[in-house]
Each structure stands twice: as C-alpha cells, then as structure tokens.
Amino acid sequence: VQPNSRTQSLASRLSPNSLARERSVLASWVRADTGGPVYSAIRNAFIDQFSLLYLVLTEGTGSLPEAMRPEYIQLDKDCTTLIGLLLSRSDAWAARDWRKPPILKFLFRRGKTGRPLTRLGIAAQVKELKLADPERWTWPALTAQFCDCGEKQHQISCQDNLRREVLHLEKLLERCGYAV
Ligand SMILES: [Zn+2]
Image (cartoon, rainbow, N blue to C red; front, side, top):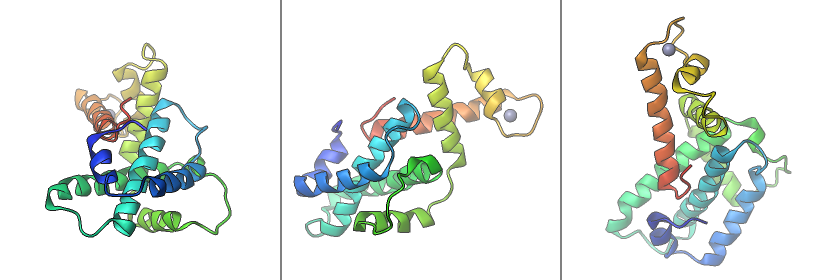
C-alpha cells in the first residue's frame, strides 16, 4: 500500500483488520495478471479506495467530521471513476461463484449506476502503450490510432484532447497513491 493523506486520515477511523479483510476480498475478484503497469495501478487504487469507501459507509464511527467531507466527496468520485474503468474491461473480473460477499454486492449496485468511461478507458490504453514503447507511440501516432473524431486528418486539438484525458487519468492515480 502506498499511503496518501486521504487514505491515512479516513483509514484512521476504521479497524485495520476490517480494511485488510475487504481489501483481500476485492483482490481475489479483480484479476492481477491482465494488462501492464497502468492496469495494475488502476487495480491497486480501486482495491484501496473502494474498501475505504465501503467501510466508511458501513462501519464508519458516526458521521464524518466536517473537515473530512471534501476528502470523502473526492473519494466517492474517484471510486465511481475507478469502477467504471474496471467494469469496462471484461477480462478484469475473476470468474467466481455468485454468492457474493457484501462488498461485492455494494460494488455491483454502484457499477450499474456508473457511466461508461470510454474516453478514460482509451486514456488507460494510451498510457500503457506510451510506457511500453515511448519511441513508437508518439502523440501523433497515438492520435492517429485512437482519436474517434472521424476525420482523415487529425487536428492539433485531437492530440490535445487525448493528452488531456491521459493527464486526467494520471492525476486520478496520483491522488490514490499509485502514480504511473
Ligand atoms: Zn481526430
């Protein structure tokens, strides 16, 4: 676990045993052996952040102090984004029986309300390629491969949009303690 301030301040209100238990439930449901370092960062961030959110909501000791509200709101948003990223990958989920532990039921209820995250999902693929082979995957090459504007000639704004989405993903992972 790479600690970050949000994880520490919210986790300090919860039992370390409960956190370890929920983390291991999630870890057994999300495959570790698919994709590269970006996928791993998304997976690790999800396991940390979602077990935290689940326990704050189910076993948090009373209501959160006002000072922690902004952290909680950001945690909630980040969880929705991370869930969208994982749910959009059919190879992310281990085939398990359907007697789901409570945290999984909670997860799939949330997942149903989440929007599909096509653009951020593409950003994850882009970042993965860039890390694997930066000389081949320049921004113009990535734009030609992934931009969905439909034009034959991509504009500089196409490249900017792609870079912005990758930056958005990088910031999310950094916030969760898993910078790539
Ligand atoms: Zn384009």
